[in-house]
Length: 485
Image (cartoon, rainbow, N blue to C red; front, side, top):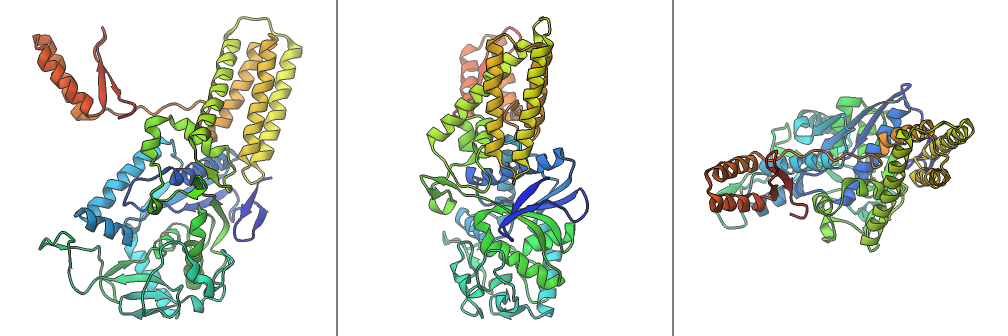
């Protein structure tokens, strides 16, 4: 029986979706104004693992994730870089998808952009206004948290404590309460000028509404998106711990006020912080490592193991030593698998007694593993059972007691485990070599055939400058990405 910790109740509960084996799950996605860092990766790897485990247990999971492509941070960054907000967001949306592909995070059913749901957002603001939960001031439409009597039930804070929020506070002198948040932000009355002093005005993202042209606040996009795909209530909402207040608190306040139904979500799952020397990794603090920077130095599977071997609700401290430890653990796994494959392919006479011992070992390990995973996805205990299997398996191999069928049993079990862990038999995704590089490779080959080796060497340098190296072989040139480029 699967039990999971619910942030709302502060206890473990039997996992029971509202409709049998159907699970509707939403996780807060990226704000596309910069590259994602490994703190973000932690959350996305965790939920990728959880969703895949639920599927392995027979659940039909619809995993929805939003893309925040309109936001103050986006507007400010676009102004700084002197680019269109849309150009900026589409660029970093593409980079985010590349990062997820590199991390083998592929369990998301649907990505939903905020800007593709303006109609739904306006509808929610309109209904909140009509029900008396929203009010209009000079710079926008705001949610009045004093009107929602259960405000703070997720974070265990009162409306008076709303000033302690740590993420994205809407500042406005006209607000009724310090914790009130913006639902619809009006466009500036005067055209904003670029900070460089250029005459061309910066165009803020803006859409027409009955209150005036503007753009959505941050919190309203999530409930508008989830209402469209799931209705007013659904099974699971996930995200990082720092989103509990005020973001997730705001979502509850909005949707439950609109629908009159509660709870908005049956189970709230939150990942712990990824810290650096005990300090939370964050763009605002400048202490972050981007996913792409990490993957230039280490394989994906190291990051997946580093993340998954910690309990998803616990903090993890990122250090070079912790990464090297994960690397050593993977080496142990790889060595064991290599030995198993050798045993599986050996032509040895089966020993029924020893085969029975291994089958029993696999059976016990499976029970320990499932018991750990069904106890709030306790991956530290689950991975401990994996290494216990490795220790006992190595002992049998050393005694020449690992016969082909027994080795196959263990390999099959590890394969099932890796369907959701994806660090045991991880296969690197073959990266498509850019057309520009392939064109230069062809050009170099033509120069070599003509005997223009000096010219061919110049082209090779161009290929290197693009981050690729070329090796000449009998069957033709081989192109590889430069690992530390």
